[in-house]
Amino acid sequence: MLAEGAVMVALAQILSYIKLFGDLPNGGSITLAAVPIVLYAVRWGLGPGLLAGFALGLLQMVFDGAYAWGWQSMLLDYLVAYTPLGLAGLFKGKSWGVFPGALVGNLGRFAVHYISGVTIYKILAPTEFMGTTFTSPSFYSLIYNGSYMLPNLILCLVAFALLYKPMKKYFVGADLQRA
Image (cartoon, rainbow, N blue to C red; front, top):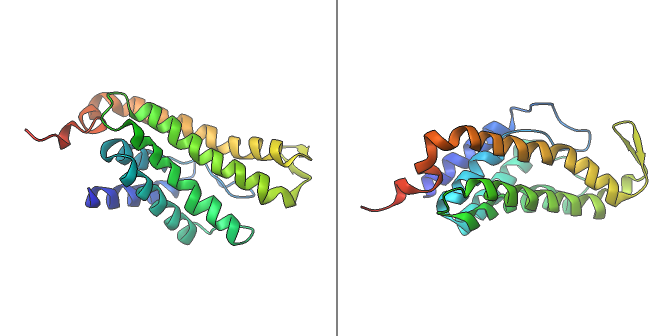
């Protein structure tokens, strides 16, 4: 379990460098980094999944430039935000667990980024994003964080849909069953 976790966290970190549309101005990008963490969480459960998400957040903070407005932002946008990807572990052993797991994990991550935007990044209001000036930190955080988290969720679901049939026994943890 530990070795697989290390490999999945490393793979997630590598996938985070392949940014499909580059970085957004205040952090955030569209990548497949969540896929290995969600898969690991669904295979091994909630605790190991949360730990793997936390480890990815730590690596993101150290190696991805840590765009932040103080220690509170670093805590929320990295360490706390990636940890909920491990909520996918709630679906351990379920035949289609990677799909609701991806949804719950990515929504958990979005929720943390949203809270960070409303509480910390409100200092930027009013701000312009995609040609629109936002005066409400709540609405800005919803739009800004949704602009990369929704595509990340969709990419994660598409990846699992493409890989499900050939990798089903790994997705449901059947290779971990004792004879």
